[in-house]
Length: 473
Image: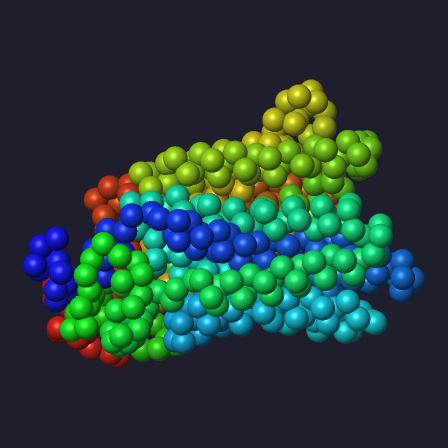
């Protein structure tokens, strides 16, 4: 080891993080991030399994719990940007721990729910925390992962949502017949509390966050040694922020999300997310109903609808191979190919094998876009605004998700043939595709290739001047 490496007088943050070897501890951090992300999927799916039991227990019609479903999504819409801003101000790790622990506790409280009103309040509060966990997990894992594999790791972490969606069904089949619907919440709450403890003990804070917020003392040096045991980091070592990162914005400010290049990038990300989430939730909400209305049995409709998720898993595998090289380009293709496939998911007049391929293809494109967007949020936004940028983009997506059941109900009230309902989300996918083309052009102009990296924060977006020492290496 050279004398300079032993002294490590000045450590560039990008070189420090990107020079890591991917060791078992890195794998442990990714696993914890996947489990934390699973809280989103588990929460989304769990109420769907609990609702029928509550309706029978409370002797209510099927529409009685619609406010509870909506309250959860509204909570996520608010929680994403609010806890994203708090993550940019107070740290990613504290917000993740608070979010997971609160969701776990609320799961246990919900087992004692006695009315629709109580359920609405609890679902809203749970949604706040679920929406807040997502942007902070994504930001933290992006900031401690080497650049050469960051896109692939972000795709893996976002697959945690799909993992979470699958779990309530397993619990329902194995434990609910014995212990009742409460088992879904008890298992979910217990796992979430355990993950919160593991995050507190094992996960680091983002060193990029610490240094950019002015904490470049012993805490940052301890973390640097944890990330890079191959370097001898002394007590007098200092950290350099790459000048490309730009100045640090005022804490809690939204201004950087719409300044400089982000004036175009942020709105395009929001449009892409909202359009895709509308198509995703529309398919999850209405596909079984559409198939049964066309004459399929309950079992057959369920089997066909599951192909949507299978297609999504295949998209995740593909993106692992290409996201770091091609950036936004695969998402453009998925938007435009997905639009006609989503439009055709209710066309049961197609030969069965062709119809199954259409559903799987729609899932491939819609879920693929979602996985890709999650990865891009960790790549495009710089550290200082990553959590808030991710949180607001997720909020835009929740708005699309909230619209999905409402649009379906509105079209049915207008006596639109049920087979034509998917035309609405298909049209929005085309809008998302156009926004994705604009986003691709912005990335190409900024980086000179299809690979993407962090956009710089505009000077006009900050009230905090750049430290001239930290801006040099």
